[in-house]
Image (cartoon, rainbow, N blue to C red):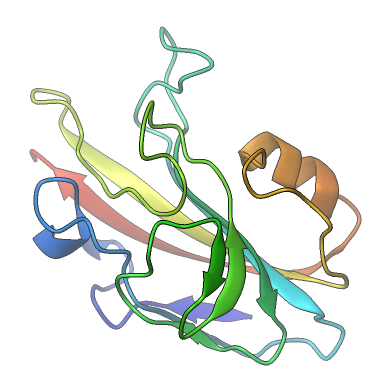
Length: 165
C-alpha cells in the first residue's frame, strides 16, 4: 500500500496551514495499491519527538489524529476535515481522541514547544479486514491499536517535519 500527501513531500516540511501555528487544517492524504482484503482503513498521526500525555517526562509519541472506519472504497481524505466524532462530510468515518487537553476529537496539527527543535509527524494508514465497533468519544490510539490487532492486512506511512531546525 502507498500513502502520499499532495501538500508536502515525504520527509518535507508540513505547510503552516496544517499546523497549530495557523489554520490547523488536516492535510489532504491519498493512498493506492490497496489489498483486496481491505474492509476499512484506520489512520494515526503522531509525533515521536514530543512527550506523550501518558508519559510527560519521556519522549513521544504525542498523538495528533485518530481516524477509523474509513470505507474500503475511499482512496483519499480532503484537507480540513471537521473536528467531530462522526464524519459524514466528503468522507464517512469516525474520529477518536488526540492527546490535546481540549478540542481533542479529530486532527490537531503540529505546534512543537519553542526551543524543542524540529519534530517528525508520522501519518500511518492501516488497511483492515474488518469494520470496528468502537465509541469514537472514547477511542484513543491505544484502544484503536488493541482493536486492530490481528486485522491489519497492509500499512503505509508518510512523514512530514515541522518546527525550528
